[in-house]
Image (cartoon, rainbow, N blue to C red; front, side, top):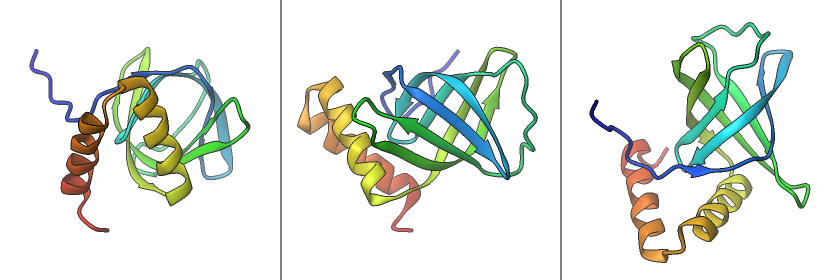
Length: 122
């Protein structure tokens, strides 16, 4: 199987909620990247695959990484979502989290450049 990921994934455990419309579900976060998240599929949930999902990752200092995402793959066990929008405060927190886990400013800069290239200036 060929690996298609352009972004490093950081294993991360934090209180995470996934929401769609007026519904939200607590999920077990597996990992996070500058471009999205992977989490264990909740036992009971009902999403509409074409509609965006809101991801809320609560950090230990009570700050939140919030992102709007789209479902990119789902298995009976895991759900992968790609970030389609993230605010400045959240991307700053996410960048710092990845920076602390990767330990290389040069590597992080390559990741940010790839993210900008993939999503453009929108």
